[in-house]
Image (cartoon, rainbow, N blue to C red; front, side, top):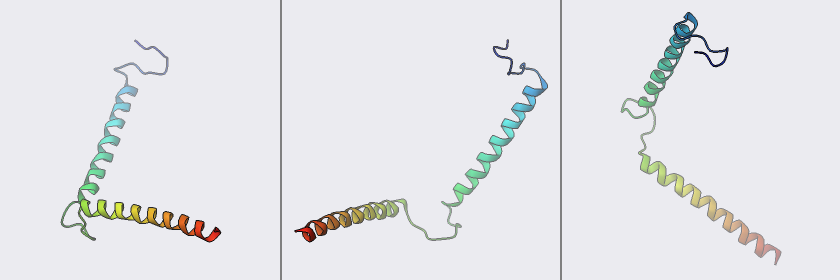
Length: 82
């Protein structure tokens, strides 16, 4: 039973081809992406080895540094006008 005229019947060749395309594209995309993501966490991956905790601490430190610079800039601006 088709509610709108756009959908193909369940057993038609168009529906089968559509399902085949969906399976091929989704399986290919996820398999390749999983392979590259796993490469970041292996010992064989090239580059600097940094733990996630170090990255978190460095990013929080950077945010704090920028916030301190903003406060210092506001204080400098207030003293300069007075």
